[in-house]
Amino acid sequence: QQQQQQQQQQKFSTSTSSSPPSKLSSTRAQNVLSLLPSYLLDARAITKYHPVNSPEGALQLSVAENQLSELPILDLDDAKHAKVAALMEDENDGAKRQGGARVTLGNAGEGMTLVDVLSQLARSTVPRPSSSTGLPSAQSQTEVHVFEKEMIYYQPTQGVPGVRNAMAEYLQNLLVTPHRLATEGNGGTTENDGARCVAMDPENIILGAGCNAVLENLCMCLVEPGEAVMIPTPYYAAFEFDLVARAGCHIVPVNTFQHHPETPPQNTSTLAVTSSSTSNHNQPIPISSYYPNRSSLDQAYERSLAKTSRPPRVLLLSHPNNPLGICYPPEVVKECIDWCREKEVHLISDEIYAGSVYRAERGVDSDGQGATFVSAMALAANHDNHAISSSDAGLGLGPYIHLVYALSKDFALSGLRVGVAYTENPEILVPMQKLNDLCQISSQTQLLVERMLRASVLTADGDGDASPPKKFVDVYLKSNQANIRSRCDKLQQCLDEVDIPHLPADSGLFVWMDFREFLPTDPVIDDATGEETLESKERRERQLYLSLMKEFGLLFTPGMSMRNERAGFFRCVFTAASEEEFELGLERIRVFVEKERRG
Image (cartoon, rainbow, N blue to C red; front, side):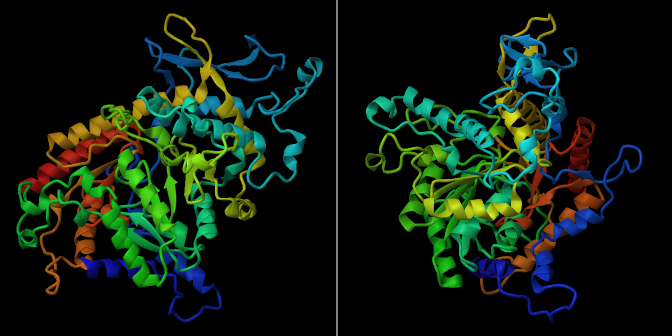
C-alpha cells in the first residue's frame, strides 16, 4: 500500500513538465490538462440522453447540480405545506404594502420557484437592503433602482459591506447558532458562564467568484509552492486542479482504511475469481472507515515530510463530504481541529453543502453529538477563551481554522459565482483581499445576493390562508432539503432492492455506491506487496465505468478519480436529473444489475 501511495504522489508533482517548450504556449498551460481527471474525456465523448434526439444516450449523473431547485418552494413549517406566494423586501417604494414592507406577488396558484424569486429580486426598484436612507416617497414612485449609479464604479475587493453583513448573518444562523443552542439546551456553556458571545465578523469575510477561487486564494496565502495540502480520501477530484494549477500546492491523500480495525481486509486471493456479494473482499466498507483520525493524519504528515522535506501546511476537510454524501461526526472534526492546532497545520473546512443536510439528527446526547452536521466553525469557536475579551469580534477561532463556502450547491446558484472565505488570521486578511482583485463578484450580482439573503416571503395554502412573513433563505433551505431527501430515499431503496452496498447518505447531492461485484476479474498483483497495483485498479474500474456509460447509459463519477483506496466505487449525483430522467436511471440500474448477475 505504501508503494501505491508513492505512485499516487507522482500525479501531484508541482515540478515543470519535461516536454520540450512550445513557442505557442507555456509549460504551465501544457500542465493544466494533466491535472484534469481522465474520466472527463470519456464523459465528454459520449452521447448524452435526450428524450427525443438521443433516448438511448447516457444519463448525466456525475455533475454536482441540483435540478430539484426548479420545483415550487414549500413552507414545511406550515401544516398544509403552503406554497410561497409573495416576496417581501425591507424598504418602501410606494408599491403594495403589508406591514410596512413592499410585497411582490408571485403565482399564488402554482407557487414560486427559486427562479421566480430571483427574477423578482433582479427587477426590484427598491434601494438595497443595507441602504441607510431611501428616496423620498414622491420620488421613489418614479425612480428606478434596478441599477444604482454607484454600482458602475470600483467596489471593495472583499465584497460590498452590506453583502458581507448579510452573509455573516446567514452563515452564523447556518453554522454556529444551531450548535450553540443545542449545547446550551443540554447544559453546555452559555454566556452567563463567562464565555464570550461568538459571532461571525463581516470584516473577516472575503467574497469571491466561486468556492474554488476563494479556496485557491486562501491556499496562496497559507502554502508555499511545493508544500503539502492533506485531503482525506476519497475527495472531490477538482481539488487537484484548484490547488495545483496556479497555487502550486502538493496534494497528499490521507488514506484512512488501514487506521480503522473495522475495515474488512481486501482478500487478493479472491480477486481473480468471479465476484459475489458474499466474497470477503466485497464485504461492505463501514462508514467509520472513511473518518480521518490521528493515526491516519500522522501517517500523511510523515509522507508529506518525506516527499517535500517540509511539514504539510493545510488539512482540507470536505464537510459535509463530497463524494461520500455524509457528514463527519463532531468528534471526528474536533479531533482534526485539535490535531491541526497541536501540529500548527491550518485546517480549511469546505462546508459548501452545509445547507443541504437533510437528515438532521443521529440521536441527541448530553454533548450535542446527536446532530448530523456540526460545523468546524462551531466546534473551533472560543479557542483559548480565557485569554479573549468578551468585547472582541469574531468566533475566536485562532489563526489556524478557516472556512470556505458558496451559494453554488445549497441554492443551486453555480452560475452566479458567489464564494465565501472566512478567516480570523490577521496576517492573511489583507493579502486575500488584494488577491481577490482577480476574482471579484460583479456589483449587480452582489446586490442580487444581498436582496436574496434579506428577503422575506408570504406563503398561502390551498384555502387561501396566508402565514406571517418568514425569511426566504429559511423557507427555501427546508423545502430543498425535503426534496433532496425524497430523491435520495428513492435511489437508496432501489439500491437496497438490488442488493448494492452504499453509504447511508445524509447530506449533499450524492450516494456513494459499491459496485466492486461487477469489476473485471483480471487484476495484476504486485509480487512484493501482495496487493493489486494502482494501474490495475484504475484499468479495471475504467472498464466498468465505460460499460456503465456506453452499454447501460449511466454516467457516474468513478471512485479512483477521487483517489478512493479501492476500485469499484462510484458517486451518483441523484439531483442532476429531471424526475423523468431520474426514474429512467433507476430502471437502468436494475437492468444493469440483473444482466451482470445473470452473466
